[in-house]
Image (cartoon, rainbow, N blue to C red; front, side, top):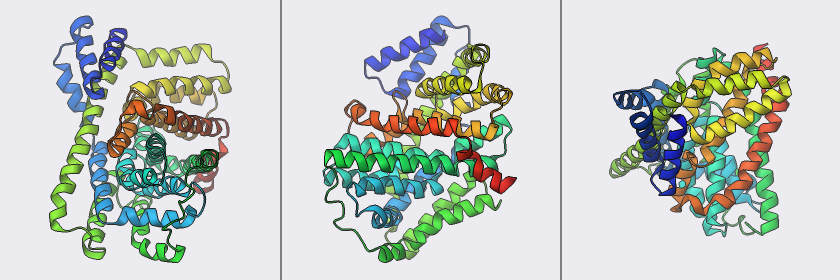
Length: 425
């Protein structure tokens, strides 16, 4: 049945049927034509895929991102980041990476980061002469930091599934996140030098002191969110609600850029964006259920256990497998299914489960920027008003940068564990 589902899904892609519809149709076709599962499973699994408390953070973080965009918070974060790196050639593109780093400490969601920051920086980069494909790919890739820099919903799911401390996972995420930031900034700087992008990025740059003063309340947002989570005041999902109220209060009462007539369009935009993402997650949940029922993840786990005999080879095999799986199955669903299978095997090979968690999250997050199910790509393309096929060539170098960072994270455990050991040992 699983082979038939993949064939049907690829045929749907060939006829340009929307991704979520293709996934759902392939799942239903697999059940109807080749499986013994009753069709009653379809609504049950679709509902079950989105009936999770952690997923409530997605619409709230998207709403917070839209409030930050309209309320002037995102713009001030962008101006602050631009004041730091905007004087360099390619500084506007570097600003995208740096702003996503700051925003990731608030959002916990790569999709929310894509919409909130991309709405400002993608048009700005295009206006400054960056190709649309480059600007869109950079935004989608940088937004991946939303699930690596804590708070991170996939890390929470990994911690629950693998019975690993979520606090340790959060602390371990900082090292890999900062490495990816450094890798993207270095690549953007070199690429801008080679291609001649961003020579005028310094124009309109604020003095650092002015930008910092204007962004002070915006910069307090990640302090409140992370402080509340680490202080045990609220969960990451509850932090999303706090982010909404903070963005609303600052935007309406302090910056006064949000008026009552803005609220309905903001809520409407947030509902539509959330519905698109949740529809993909719902159909991916059904697809993942059928793949799991067919024994595909277990077969992968058994294959790795039997054929890979050293930690080095095991991690290489896991990374290759997760990269492929992440392209077809939603990140959260992949973690819930695979973590209980792979973590015991990793421990047998002497791999720290916290370190393994960072590897899984970073690797599966690649699925957010790789076709066919890259939700960050769809979000960034929606902002840039372009199609996925037009940015693939520009996307490839960014994927290679993340893969290079993943190899460093995989084979240099102290990058993830040094801070964890410092705090918890």
